[in-house]
Amino acid sequence: MSGLGMLTMAIIYRSLDIQVVGVWVLFQSTLLLVDTFRSGFLTTAFIKFYAGSHPERTAEIAGSAWVVGLCITGILVIVNIPVMFFLKDIHDAGYMLFFKWSGLCFILMLPTFIATCVLQGEQRFDRMLYVRGVNQGGFLLFILILIIIGKISLMGVLFSYLLSYFITSVYVIIMGWARINTIRHKSRKTILELYHFGKFSVGTTISANLFGASDAFIINLMLGKAALAIYNLGQSLMQLVEILLRSFAATAMPSLSAAFTQDSPIGVIHIMKKYIGMLTVVLIPIIICGWALADLPIYIIGGGKYIGTQAANVFRLFLAFSLLYPADRFFGLTLDVINRPIVNFYKVLIMLAINISMDFLGIYIFGNIYGAALSTAIWVMAGVAMGYFALNKYHKFSFWDSYSLGFSESKLLLASTLQKFRPKK
Image: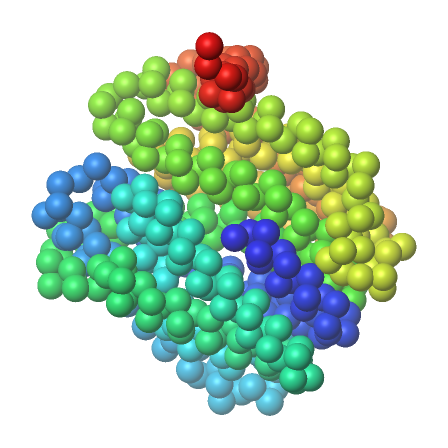
């Protein structure tokens, strides 16, 4: 689905002017950042309490999550209403688009969001694929229709985005995957459980998503929308790495939660190290190929107008830093699972402060988007170091053991896979 999203992005990049693409990037960055207040508040808390619970308990959690989700959505919409009266005073097209349409976006996205939480908690990744297929496929289809009839524009892309979420939300409600009927099973106790856990995890999630958003805001401020479009193109190609990170994280979290519930620190750390190591092993050939062929995906997605820009080198820089992404992602995920979200929150806050200060300093020194890209290396290394020391207080382990374990597990997986294809005697 991330690949389908990249295809949609490629069509948008090739169909719209570079300045208009910059407006769309700023709108999406702002929208997704604000929406993380809802997703960050609920996702980790929901899965933690939902996974492995008995049916009566899951109904209570799902219904309570709907109440929390509706409250947060209502707050986001209400807070946005006063700004509508001052739209004429907003001179940036990206921010104007956000304040004008974000309320409707948040409402249409809610059922889809709750459904993905439920399906992840139930480990029904087949159904998650259908949900994302309807969402991404619908968005792509509407964009293609606009191109065919010659009506592609910024507003056309926006309405396609809204319509794709409306259809997806109707779909998950009809299929019963959003479990909207469980609202009657809500309980004050469970709502408070979700709230008390979510108030820490939301800070972590918002801060984590601020990395990309702060890059967008600072580049837009200091270098303009054309530079933002070029930077986003190079950064967006990292979706290939994000596919792996999200997939491994989604499958690891229920296992980590189960090990923690069974009071097995050794099991928690072993699962974490295994995923870090295996994911890093998988990334190595991807990074090598990406470095060698960086100009090709830039041309395929952005077209000829982006060849010769800094987009390919930005992609190469992010690829180089991505070897540390698995450790950073799974250290943070494990801290949440072992009920240390406050530690994770402070860790991410420090990383964010480093990123923002290094963005300003880097762009000031280099005068281009390389300054923002290079700042990534500093905050990722800081995050890995802080996560490692925090988890060692829970259970001591060797950082480098993650990679040896991952290599061993990868060999076993490869051997068992090859065994299946060998002809039987």
